[in-house]
Image: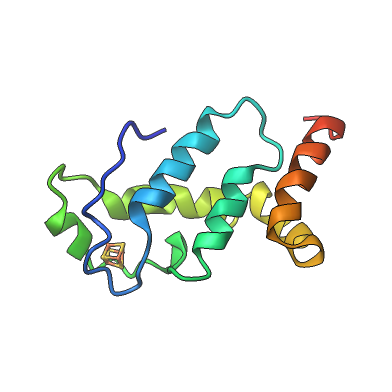
Length: 118
Ligand code: SF4
């Protein structure tokens, strides 16, 4: 889990990666008690309709040069990508979302988490 959220690092990203939001969703997902389907993933997926995915990073490091906190953003984005682009949440939610749409997916996630054992 990353104990930060930064606002200025998205500026200038050629892939329009929503870095602060992705880190925030990653942190929130890691704090969650369950490893089941997460609403954070649905928010992530929604953001990727207008932004690049974490895995789209081309490692140009423009964000790191602009980051006042000197964060290793490229490395952290790899963790975000592993969780949201390739992980269990991706497989489960990506199957669900096309059938029921975004708002209903959040409700469906809550219902599924109640009945699916960890
Ligand atoms: S290193 Fe990745 S996240 Fe940072 S500006 Fe370049 S493409 Fe965007």
